[in-house]
Length: 224
Ligand code: C5P
Image 1 (tube, rainbow, N blue to C red):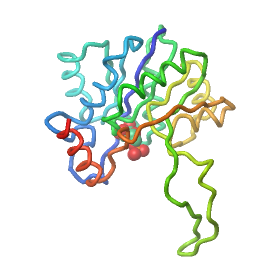
Image 2 (image 1 turned 120 degrees about the vertical axis):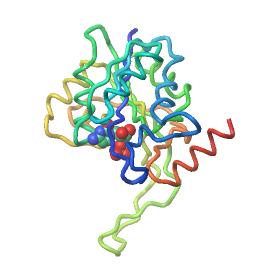
Image 3 (image 1 turned 90 degrees about the vertical axis):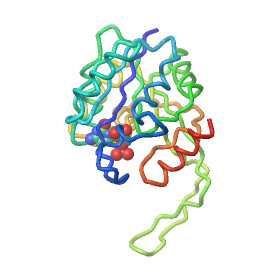
Image 4 (image 1 turned 180 degrees about the horizontal axis):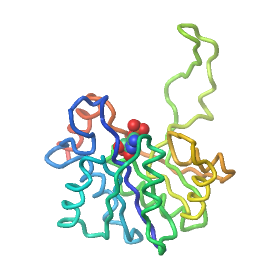
């Protein structure tokens, strides 16, 4: 089994307000990107890494990886949307690879157990696998300030990354929807009729979006 990891790290991080791309923000002495890469290094099935980088930082990230990454690694500049960045990452994979994990670099604390579970589910024959968590808050639909509906939360899930796919399946799904801008890759696969199965996510795999999230990540890192 050969698994590639595409780390999408080209977001601007505007909502974090640090003045540098989010992937390069410090998290307890290492960048968010560096910590996200580390989450995949213990998996023997993972054979290559593609980092989709903020264009202005691609060269410096490539030289850092050349000196310190134990996996074959390629750095490509990202696009304007996450979907464009994923397309660029998929285009950079080697021909040898059978499966791909697409991961938000903004989820640097994803536990190795979640990565392993996604890989194991691909190994057992699934074309597409996503980690999910239940929705614990009540969810309402609103129009402006007005509540229009209380949604049944029992069937709803919060979706995380890494999302795992057979490479040919995900490539075909993206090729079939060249203009689609989706917030996750499973959404692109679903639009192409692919069956997506779920595994248990983990609260630690939360996405760092706001200053509050970064503070929480710092506390978790410092607590070990
Ligand atoms: O902005 P959002 O929360 O959707 O970002 C999720 C992930 O996608 C982040 O890791 C971010 O760096 C990445 N991204 C990207 N290229 C973009 C936008 C987001 O690689 N144009």
